[in-house]
Length: 459
Image 1 (cartoon, rainbow, N blue to C red):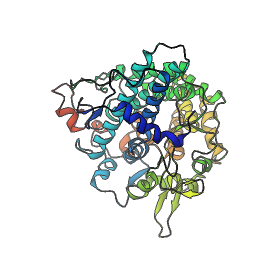
Image 2 (image 1 turned 90 degrees about the horizontal axis):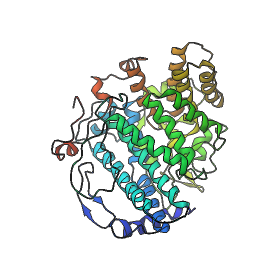
Image 3 (image 1 turned 120 degrees about the vertical axis):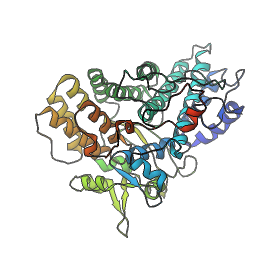
Image 4 (image 1 turned 90 degrees about the vertical axis):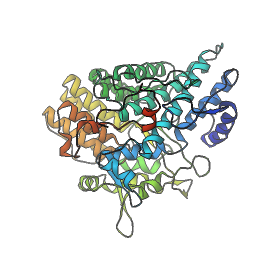
């Protein structure tokens, strides 16, 4: 497989091949969408591979997936707050009072549909190739994994993911954009169906795990377990998570701090993440995480009595707290402001399994075993309760301690637990109404849709 250091070169080639026109073509894409010419580009496996690298490039190029999305959801949740350079735009997420013209909404929404559009080009053009090359199905599978990942992000941010009967899903794009015709939102159930269809294909046809930077069958199964947990299909979520854990393709790092000191080098736990280096894949995540997005007082107070404290929190010489997970990383001995994003790592899959097997099968022993695997690795006291409600809450808290200020996962947990009746979200975050559990659609998306796209309730 081509080394990561060549991706930017590949993206340049892809730009020549793929991005042949520049027109506003769809209301789900606030900025211009670049289309692949219908009569060229993907006519063989090599061109399909090049286009696929371009789709990965859409994932790592810019900051939406790497910095902005995990940061704004962590601010909506419990573990991050606006940094010293953060202003009203950032603070609106921390206060859970975001307006539809917020800068981050438009940027993230557009970037995610941009990646989906690229993935759709790869999928539809590669499927038409007449070849016996086994790489054909693998390329389609990787593109479908990336499409599923982006659709899941979109659903959790802008769709009522907690209610499968809701009509407020997201706009589903399954073909490359070729016209400016607006399209209505799909239902939540329809959105879940497409995500899971893509993941089933990826599980069957994606390559076996070889690198954390590329989609694999095990990454697809890990994401499937997470999607099924959100869909409330708990028994199947537990089964998928257990298969990932028992696959032996990934294992927990020896210590919690190893996750964030190894980063991308000889990792054991990361399942899917973004690359970075000193020349080709630079990003400013570490800078953004100390300037615009900081760690919250709540997170610091929760970590103070936890053995992961020093690995998670650092302090400057002036006493300012920093997110030590993403704090001036080093690549080949060179300090960088760049860093990775862990989309999936095995520690989270253990906690997905713990919750799913408890909710779906009432299996207290299995849930405790999975939960305590993470507790033991972090050298914390093991949980011994046999009360289901207490264990569910312990799992939610553990995700704050294990994944806090990392991916915003605790925000979605607050929403899910609130909707399940396990907690009142206002105990942790003051929410004016349940309409604030999802974000408003970007204002241009609604205004340009000719009445087809309804704004989320309460906005």
